[in-house]
Length: 135
Image 1: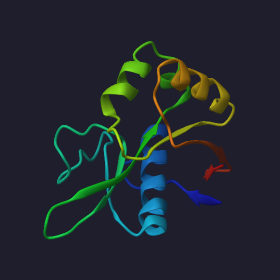
Image 2: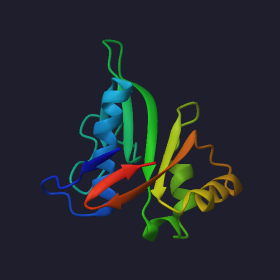
Image 3: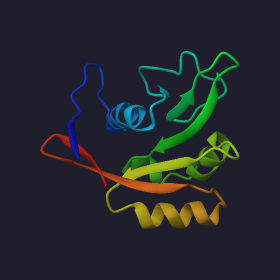
Image 4: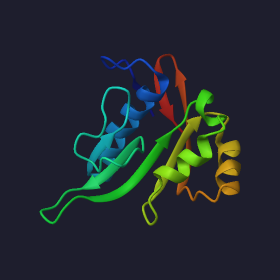
């Protein structure tokens, strides 16, 4: 499953993956999606929510968070603040997904387990010939 990631204004690997996954999952889950990148800062989501991607159901009684996803890069996954960040952005009862570079899945799962951060699933991504693939 590959998609070209050359969207105008997107320069970092993190933002490229966030944008691609948000577009794909908005269609797959049939919901509204807000993202948190260097370009867009969740314009109508909960201002306290700092997760990279959030799927919402919108109704007259209010927005309801359906799922959340956090994207890490090879630079961020090994950082000392990663565990506190995951704990800070997760919302109890809301499915929480993690996307990491290919080859980092096992390490990320161990980190999450040690920190008691319950990811619903961990996905890997990779770039092949300017195409981003989510595995």
